[in-house]
Length: 449
Image (cartoon, rainbow, N blue to C red; front, top):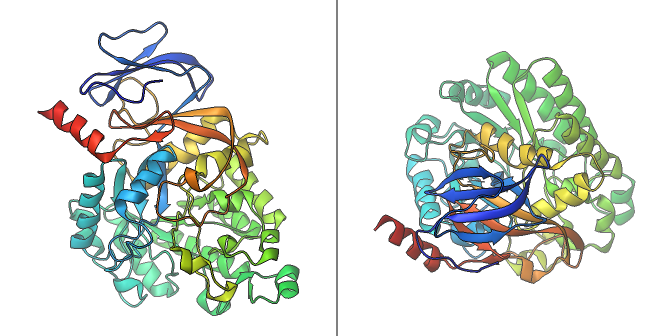
């Protein structure tokens, strides 16, 4: 497979397997999927031999921490975009816990512009629900919605909107422009000084427990508020079996709620904390095996709508310290597709069509992301990921393209590998290698020159 192509020429992807099992050729031209069929050819096209590769619509992450502005020592929009492209993502939604907080039209437009400048993926800013994430008064929701960033997802992630009246007002406000509140479900009074999942293991390890009810009680309250208001609610990083039950009940009742699970909550359990390795410290915490199984079942039956990474990079010193002082969070963009493969595809719970739904179509729909999640059909934007399901690798530092090395999967054998990522018809990753920003920028300038 070639590592470069002549500027302005189309791509011929030969012999790829679509998510439904169909083997076909694809032509990408002028930023679109131009042709689909057998025995295709295109004059001047660069051919990508895709025998054995699965072609998925570009992945969409509804929950990413890019840290910029303000915390560039952890990640920048450029490095986070590169990590996303290496993981097969073509669009990410950037959480609002930056400095300054993404609570005004000016800041979300700055994040949008930095994403456009980086060019590896579409970066869609998420707006804060409250000013400064302080939970006291609503942020400029309408101004962010009508800004150039066209914000439709609002979240105080990292903090719960714990005031029920404020949450009600936020749901009422965003209903006017088809927005959604993405709630970090964590009752703060029930999780003071909490360090890990509450249970027998937390007692054994001497760490303050984080009860499941702290998550479940907020979800129960919020689905009832969403029903009362008639607005859209999205539940971030669901982690307990009880939460799955509440969401399943709410959906059966007809409440307009969607939910996400992270790759790490689909694969990892609290048992990993026995070594006090802070790479496994995360909010919400890793839970019991029973919770992991419930999340997998909830994803399979549609109770949980999507997988979202909650990519949370930190500098080394924030993790290489005693457990109590360590920061919460894991990086996840580069490993997400392989972890989903390991957790729910190899077990037979999900097929590749389901993967395309939970990692592309559904998050794009929830976030109202134009040009994303449309599938591999003629005329759709050329947002595409080629994945080798037969590959296997020991996941290491070299697999991480962002600044953060706080991956829970280091030295773990994971299935599959992203071979190519196409964003707006340009290869940002090819042969598994990240292309340089200068090369992509030059190619675009030549095409539009």
